[in-house]
Image 1: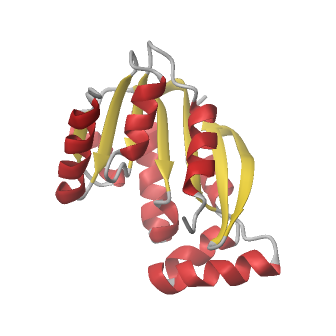
Image 2: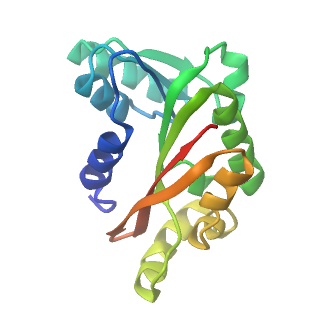
Length: 193
């Protein structure tokens, strides 16, 4: 696949390290593949998937039922978590959502995630981050053409770690940067104090 999805999903799952007593929220869960991975890794964890698209949530529900993964699915935008009634969670994961959003929405999603996390909760992200080399910047242009330069350029310029910190997170760390045929995908961790 063009994004080397298996590699960064596996790295993100290892970093999130779900445990039995935890509630893990997957923001922008799409068709549920990663939420199912989390549930397989730790069947006793409570896993909640949130996505604004009811058609992909229908697919997610069917995929989870097929694998007998007990996952809760909620239809909502990432910046609308407060209205969902989701109680505080231990960890939040997301993949490839921030590069598609305008800065104001990136901020709103981060604020919503911060609010839904328990104190000492952790946030894990895999998304297009800073494109550090000429080659990665050139490869990332194809994503920018698809998702728009205005939304994607802040990611390419390395804005995400600063935005995490501005939302109140501490211990913001870029754990990995994975080169792909569409640009580099960074894996970040951050914690709520």
